[in-house]
Amino acid sequence: MRVIITGHARKRLLDLRQGEITAADIIKAAQSIPGHVPAATRFRGFVAASGRIFDLVAKDVTAGRLVITIIGQAKI
Image (cartoon, rainbow, N blue to C red; front, side):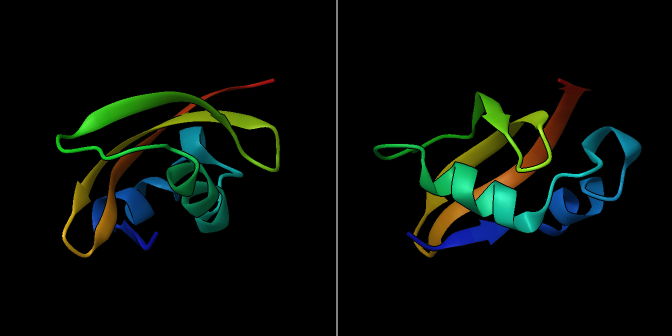
């Protein structure tokens, strides 16, 4: 499945709270969500390669899975 990361989500990656989360982490997390997501939904508990826990908000559009934003959590 194609994953599209919005400009807003890319900008959030530069924030301290989302530090150490990469676009590759987001793509892997978005692709791991099963089924069809017709409305913007928050998915919790993904772990980046760096160990940072994050949530993402995504929905499916015609072009693929749209990642709207990323919410970083405390590092474990």
